[in-house]
Image (tube, rainbow, N blue to C red):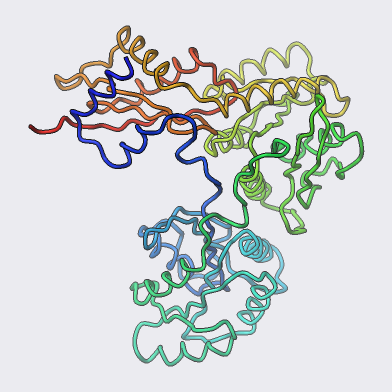
Length: 474
């Protein structure tokens, strides 16, 4: 059957990429080389120098908030960006100020974190004002970080301001690129220079490790019990535990013996810097979650079973799924829940976690250690699914049976049909379906559901993409 389907594909227009995908014998993934997060380019500078205007210019749309008032941007905000054929993550930051209090202090912290979590930096200075004392403080910060820097002299709208831009050589960061972020003048040259500094894969997140102990990211909103769980698993007070949310400052990797094997657990409450997390808990939590997932293979998301699920809980679970990592849900503080609470919890799970019924669930108590041993089979199941590959013949036999019983609805007098299916990669499993027409989202979800029923995939997200191909014209 598989051979017949493959030969039938010869009647359709296929790209070189299609041919490469179809010639893969299934022994290795097309994209299973060292994988990791896209390189990160951070845009920093003191308030009101035009950072967000430059970000909008780079990403080609007005997305960052721009206002002629210093300090409009307060959070570190990430955008996907492409320049000269290179994909990267662009980070817009709040203005950096030295010795400031309140909101301005938070803005400064986030800018510093952005530099630490970036592979290269675009430092924006207002050419019409020249280098200020604050700019010189930023230069010191950048030198300490040892990140490669492109110096942008913004607000250069004509030849007169270009002379102002040349004075910025005094900052000692090399050639200043004269730019008008508002009008687009000179932005291409500055971006060309910045993109040359970026690695293929982010050195900050690191490529997905292969071999060695399996890496487990321990995720959850603040004060849900991550550090307590790590201490119980490690058998020692490895991490500071305190009722105050945000006690953990730095990430802690811990090699833990569990189920007769060694695992590398990451307590992800921290990031690299010791920052006093007095405000913006949601912002910092999402930042930590992303940084941890970049190095993990499977995530254990800790949820407080004694309290209602929160929006932040749902967001963390969604982030894991979108990152393509395996997933285990651990309901902590199970010893503190009575029958009534457990009834309501089941209702909350059905409603709020409807997109992840496939995730293994373990009810635990990090404080007492109850049922922590059940994590091992759950982790094994999730990782086995994450690594699994379905033989092409078996996949197409399954697709043929499903489509015969439940064909795609006729739309506009046409009925798209699936010509051939193949698994493009693992970690997580990604499937490509060649079809004669567009498959509706509802039908793709139906196919994903049936794939799970047939092949398991418990504990891993799976991706189903469709390539519509037309018949060759004779």
